[in-house]
Length: 293
Length: 293
Image (cartoon, rainbow over all chains, first blue to last red; front, side, top):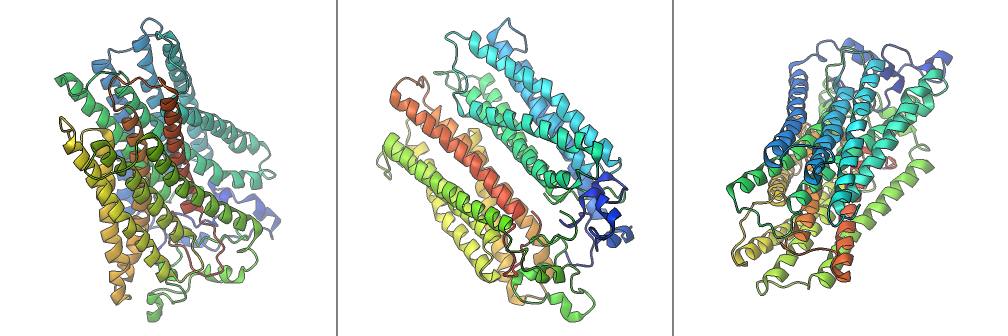
């Protein structure tokens, strides 16, 4: 942490245009507005530190662990639904239709969004515009999952007898906020970081202001999604009044599966926060991370 | 966000010894090890930017909003327990003894810990050692709250007929991890940042390595505490089997109070993350924040 050591992370003042790969910042064209940052040389000179063992080890550990957790949570959800909740169906059986809800929401809000966030921070070998497009692609894939997952639970509420009220429990409140924020983030991100690229130099200031806001709210949105998943698990487990848990061996195993799912959700929240905050990937590709987060 | 503007935040490479107030970094005594950081001058020259309107407004907004939320969540919990759950008692009535648990845990893990984290990042007018001591003092105050809160629920489980199993639900699993991490963080923080100060120069490297770890795990611990509170609220609301909610007007109001509590918890998680990450307090006191977070 002394000043001689070079961290792969740029200081907060690092120009944001560095994100655009090898391009020089637009401001530097005018000569006066944006002198080359004092830290730039240090990064370029630093060839052995960027690939040092510790940061590579941490980088690989985060990549492998997060992949296992993000895929694992989806597999565990599928296992839980298929073996303990009777599988899936659309509009035949209220309960089987409901089962689509947790699976699709976990796929959209946790697995796909998680990969999208992580690849944006950890993918250092591609040009930045491709990373951006991949980031958008993963989030775009999450949209049909979330929409179908929402429809599934909405219809299953309507089909139950008597119809269950919508947006009553804490899970539904949190879920509504999460979905609203997700749509806002997607639309604003799409326009700010892809559409506004059409006149790049003029929108530089605007886009650079948006980056930390988009990144902060993205992380908050992901944490909200995790909180919503956990509340949903608990509410679902305790949904049936009068059902006393720990009665049969089967329900006890299911209880432990659901608890494990909750713990995996928390582990994902921790690893994504750590990955996004540290992001000490080897910086040889000269793709600078956006900003401190 | 261009390189000419000076952010009140130091770059990640800023020497950690700056935290110790006006002292020079220990390493600089030897002359070679640690040259004065290239960014230091920029910070000192920047008198008008450090006090600019935007950052002051954001700083005051975060301070006021977080104070309202952290005090408000405790007041709301007290209101809920006193008016809807029958108040408090120790070892007379199982339910009244249980009521101590949410109140004390919210006081310890949310209100006191939240203030402790925030004052460490936002308090710029005191010498750093006093900020550290205050940070420790608030966390130390949380310990008896947490211990009593844990005892209350442990005894209330034992007293129920039949005795409830310990560490069965997701709330209890998360709570156990949160408490374990809290104790570890407190002990490691106490030894690393207060006891090791006795031979300051020798332990400089060790302490500077510990700072980002302590800060990251501190934030993770706080998020875990929030998740535990939310799961606890839902599990408690749905605890009584056979009780159908929305029956009486009273229970419906209570349901909305509990949901509001959950939303306030989420709002606290967001404001603390934002405050800790941005921490753009006016930097005139020359107390540098520890590191990017």
